Image (cartoon, rainbow, N blue to C red; front, side, top):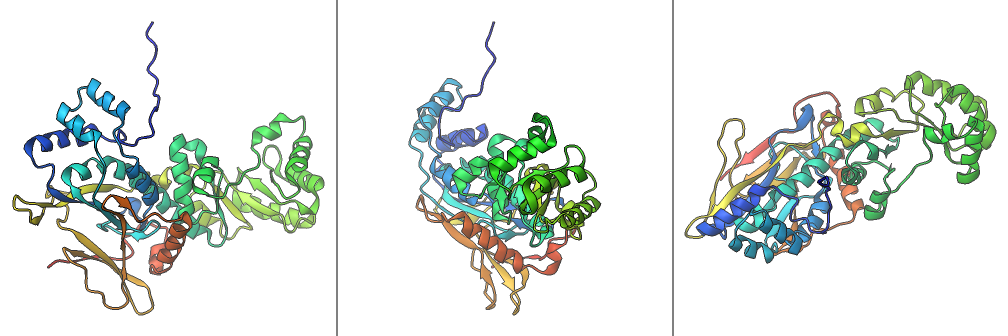
Length: 440
């Protein structure tokens, strides 16, 4: 009996996290002699998904790490050889692959708009084209999560948001989602790998199964308080909420840290629980709410006596927009004489704008953003209040744009704070600021 196929990841390389046509294009270009033409690729989104008013760049740091490990090791080359995916000369070229070009991009955490040149890759066609799938898979997912997370933290205001979506997505996507959410203002994550790998603060206490394990709710609460201290968070909706709150305060005393509500009509329930906690002397005990929250549910709870929000499914699925819709397009290349020429796609509905791009965030005298200004083939004219958006990420193959996650988090806070007030509306609408082109 044949054994079922099992996926085993045996290499740390990111080279095969790609689509086959990247390598078949490479093979044909090598054979034709065009693979070495200097080329400029650009990542951009033609529109913002879900009628949102701004997007948030996420995944830049992860992409830089992935480019560094984009190497065709012996296992990868053997797979390509055995599958007859590319020919011998292409395998030989891939064996020595190292990205030696330049990359610019919007800083991670930055706000973006339709046609913002989020990533610019300049290298030979061969070196740049093979990065397409990798760049899009990282940036599309992380930016979708960061954009959803930004809307949620906007709705939450000063109340912290906890990322807890690991059980609702792929195990590796869960780590990326926790990282992206932290950039966009989430305070903690339940995911320990995100804590180990990226330094995102972690949090967590217990689930309903812990209460159900014990003979009584009192036994469960006593075990948790004895182990984790009186400042722990008790989950109080396994059976009867009012009875559980009373038991929690009885077991932990007025020093009880928090209670968590995970079901029911959260607005009236939170008010009832707050009144009960206060009457029992636990005035400093916080109320944490969960239960499939999104930005709209969080906004609806603004008037409730809630202290923190736990968000899972809606966050890791982008709150209805699981991809940012970004594309990776060739916008300029060298001609036979070595001169750079603009190229662009002209098919209906999927038009691209050719030429190497530069970008500024136009702001008024009060520092409020008014437009995304994109210069084609030249830097746009700065009117004195503008802010340049592209930063160097890779120079001659060496990473120069790596930064602490805290820097991306701070950048997002600054970028969001300069957007016009309309950008923070949760309803569907047009982008908060227009995109303006400056062609020569």
